[in-house]
Length: 165
Image (cartoon, rainbow, N blue to C red; front, side, top):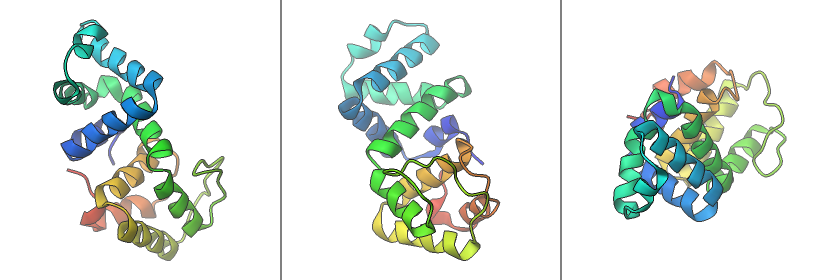
């Protein structure tokens, strides 16, 4: 399965840019941290990127975010985007599976979920939200080691709607 930096590398560029835009709008400290990490990886000062318009800055940032050395930064951005901009996806998924949560945040996921329940929850998400948003969420559950459900990677491999790349 994919890691967080690979998720950035395989998702559609428009979605990845959208994640950066959403972070820029909703969480300036996280955006600044990501910008600083990208700048450090490129061995430039953050101001170098800030001087560029977002239409140039974000694609340039994405090429670096897809690299293994920025796994932690990619994870931070994905986590922020999911919990702020995609909260409804998380809440609907967790409610459908009957997993206790606080606004989409789970203290501890169950060790397993039934195949039929997982498939039904994913189908409900796909009927309601963009496929690639659902795909990113499902991949993040695995990449961030939030769940270790053997049926989730199997479902992803069998359903092209939730695959990235």
